[in-house]
Length: 142
Image 1 (cartoon, one colour):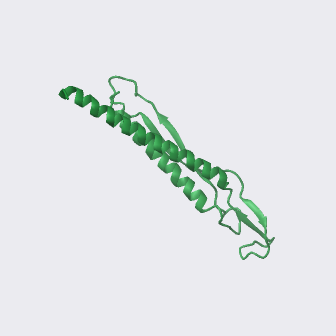
Image 2: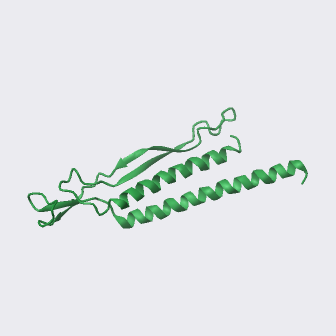
Image 3: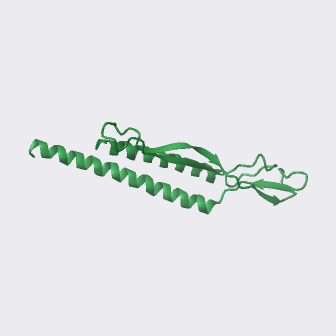
């Protein structure tokens, strides 16, 4: 595994956290939307990640398979929130409107966590760059 793969791993982790931030922002943007049916209501979305470690420790491998993979984005299985509001223009014939199954407090906590993880990976890449630079200076005699 090459030392330069640290940058690749940090890059895949930053990309994963960026997807996490975007899905969380989408969930928060739709948290107050309403629908006239449970099937049409917005459902919270969450990214699914997997670690890529195949051949990462094999000396003959270039280590390209190390990092974080984005497997996809899944919708929550939780039911939308039914609210009785017969005066709402989108109410169904029983007087219910349907709100998304998004918990804004959980989403904000997830956003803070993703932001901190992204920042940590930026710092990791910056530290690796600094170490590479210092190593090159050692070779030049300065």
